[in-house]
Amino acid sequence: MKLNLLIISAAAAFTLSATNVPTANHPVAVIELFTSQGCSSCPPADRLLMETADKAATARQPVYALSFHVDYWDRLGWRDPFSDARFTARQRQYARQLGLETVYTPQAVLNGKQEFVGSNRARLTSLLADALNQPVPVMIQVKATQKGQSVVVDTKLAGTLAGAVLNVALVSNTVSTVVSRGENAGKTLTHNNVVRAFTTVRATESGQVTLAVPANFDPANGAVITYLQHEKTLAVLGAERVALGK
Image (cartoon, rainbow, N blue to C red):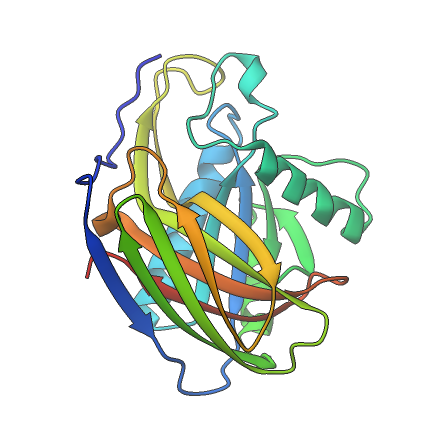
């Protein structure tokens, strides 16, 4: 297996910290893309996610994009180095909540409420416009500090937290891989906001989560995305992002 990753191993010991303090009860749009390097239909969705995230960053819009690499394509010729069975389980949780008979790639879920084919630009544009006009009920203040091979995330939440859970994701901003087998054999695939570590905890007014740093993680190319969801409906209630390496 030949991989060419733009992510570079970080030094063994370092401490990096950053904070992000929201100033208003603004709308948010959280896009979760379920994808795989073994899926020939996924690269257009990967590119659309990256384009959407870049445009939102330029416009300073509160759009939070996450790329979850599922593992059910791994047995079909190429093992995605970013795949995780827990991400497949998360996608199946959405399928049950949204009344779907099966999971598929590329699938995007916006704010935990609407799902669509991840490469469908028109659908994404329409749903984003709606989401960015709906204020969320919870504000998040985040501090992320990396020490050695752990990232410690401190959060403070303000708003209605009844029935809420907090998702904390460590992401690599941009990664590229040369795929040597499977449906995308011979292609170099680039992904945005690849989830490298992820956990869900009960939402409290203040809390701390520690994530293990995965192999080949570059803190200068990393960030932490936190977002709240209603535990039963999975609707997104708030979100924030804080960069590492600054």
